[in-house]
Length: 316
Image (cartoon, one colour):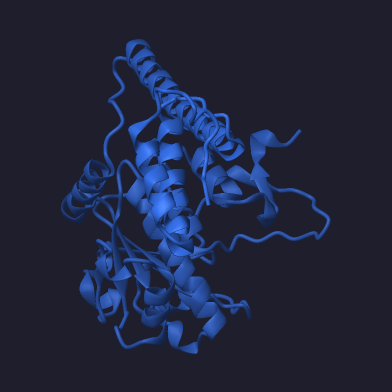
């Protein structure tokens, strides 16, 4: 059987094609198949080199390769353009705001956060989360409390002037500890103190201030010489005065957030008004006030509209 390629009558034939024609004449059916595959590979190589072959498959291959090449060239050009624009934008921002530091790496930011937290351990305000009342809580309540601890710690990491956090009455074999490990990534490496001791035995009683909504005294300032206590209690049955009574047992001073001094009730469809906040919400208020010394601004951040209270100056 004779195999011919279009244009084979020309005198200037490719040596590769001539070699294949010789092979095709001397081989059987199996050899013909292998030789045809080699011939197809050679056509593809010549196609990629930019030569126009008249065969239909080779022409299709050439168009397909060129189409893909153009597609990737567009992608690469777009990425280069985007990087260039981002670089020019950063350069313009630095020129307009010379006092602002350039964006730092995640490693640098983690090191800076760690440094601030360790500094707070020696010279910052101290906050204890009293977790000695969790043995009566349900699985659902423990999960909610673990989530609040996670959010509280996250807010403290972001604060310019963080508190030093201490989880007291907290045992590593408790259901709450297991829930914290399950829900909070990296909980075992949190930069805070964990102790089984009660907060009333860790610090002098005269330095303690138990924050409870049932107190008669409004908190006026955040004192670096005081240790503030939040009751780690999520109680869906809303048992009143649990933390207040515990503070009274140890003759410890109590205080409440100055909600009624700066906020008023606002009518809502459910006629719902509550001064009971989650521990992470109370912390957001304390942290904001410690940074700004502005109670209205701090209360606005921590007391959500769902509690039924708004700032006095926002009421029309």
